[in-house]
Image (cartoon, rainbow, N blue to C red; front, side, top):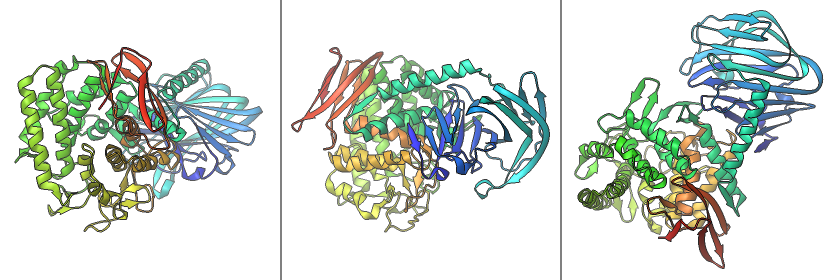
Amino acid sequence: MYLIKENKDKKYLVLSGNKGFYLRYLDNGFKTKWTGLWKDSVKYLEYFAVKGLEEEKCIKTEYTYGKAVYYYKGITETNLIPKNKTGLYIKLEFGKEKQTEIELALNIRKREENLTKRKYKIKFNKKKKEIKISNELSALTFFLIKGELNFQEQSYEKIHFPSDEKQNCFIPGKISVKGKEIIFGLIPEKEKKLNKREIEKELKKQKIQNKKTEELIKCSSKEIEKGFINSVKAVELLENNGNFFAGYPWFLQYWGRDNLWSLNALISAGKFELTEKVLLYFWKKNSNGKIPNFIDGKKVLFNSIDASLLFLISLQNYVFASGNKKILKKIKYTEVLDFLKSREENKLIFHEGNETWMDSIERKGKAIEIQALYLKALHCARNLMKLEGKEKEVHLTEKKAVNLNRKIIEEFEVNGVYRDLVNEKNEFIKTCNPLVYLMGKKAEEKEIALFESEEFNGLKGILTRSKKEQGFDSEGYHTGLSWSLINGWMSCVEFKAEKTKKGLFYLQKLIEDLNQDCIGGIGECWSLDGKLKGCGMQLWGNAFVIKIIDEFMLGIKINEFEKKVFLKPQLPEKINLIKRKIRIGNTWFELIVERKKRKVSAKTDNKKIKIEFY
């Protein structure tokens, strides 16, 4: 839970029912064109305002991912979106009977639109206590669940400038409500309305789910414990119809790259069924083995080389953790390998200019992080082949991986420092991308030193490009900003190199952001001075907290087929105990990693699960 008393006007929150979301500031304000109620990528609500509950009167705000409670003097306002629903429910508690007015403003538009010319219609049903407001795109219904309602139609449209961006909205009229407790809903078209009893059931379900999530980890460092738990909750919040948005509030699409970098967080949380859904979703939309990178309704783009690489890695991790070998009959992973082979040039993967994660700049050629992901993907494909008894293919894939690794060193390593092909002139320069390669090995001090230096660090962590490099821009999306993604890479590299103090430092950079900008979320990217420049809640930002703790601090690898958990704990000095509730196949067990007198030991509460250090 977050309880915010200061800077409420600068911080916002997100509620989600996994079919849409609601964004609002912690002082109760609707300050940008992204605030309000959304279903998928269509906006419905511009704002609502309750007379007497102005922004400056909000004392504090409580946020628990599932609901938000705004506190005023003698009055509380609870906001809720039920699980697997889109509708927003608001409860006003006055302490004594009170009559007040609600101003409701609608802006039913598509994500990419600003000003629209759509005309609205109003239908008031006094008996049902509901007001339906619609335009040709869709409709939103206001309905009173508890209290008395009086409505006078006095509709008008107005232009306003949230965050200096011109928007238009529609106010249907004067809505008066009366009661000691007022409950009303705002429901997009075709969504089911809930009654008071059903809302109470939803709140109980939320408590149960929160408790389950909180049982996933116990740690001697409460900061790490809370960071892990709240990152799981944030990832859950980004689910939308069985897949995941890349980030709130801007990236309301399914991105292959973002989903597949983040999928291990679902595996760590034991959400195998949802992981399988995501894998099958992207596989069904593949084109000759190439995994799509961007899906927005019927629009499918294949402008990524790394989505295919990350797909193989995620597939292997899922299969070995879940034990679901049958999925390999549905997903022909060798077709992905065939596609990647078609992109090989002199043992390295060739890509087009917009096919890497740095898609705002031209990187046509052979970037180092793509080669590093290919190396990892080959190792994962080899493991799947071995599982299927394809010994000949195993041998050939192992040989290819060895040759690829040699080629990476030959092409990118200069005196212990790795460089990257990144700019428009196809020149080698210093960027953050070699970190992806260093994640896969125990890096030496000289290989990490550059990234630990002032040259590569801003207020929020690792920069995309060296400050001393040509083309560096402290405001540049891929040419200077800090990203949660690359802070995640850096923390993984440090833990892999057994530099636990530094690994913890960059992990904390991520966890600290849970209290900034979007409360409970980790942002996308920041300028040199720490100003948020992207989404406030980015999928891979939160997912990397989970990934770092499980895969790099604890070194967890799961093999359901052998009933084994492989470990290589790298506990920082401040952390002496971590208990993790882990799923292997259909079994949940508790893993206990503890340090006593400088010696780290591990055990489980399930005798059938074997632990093996590596």
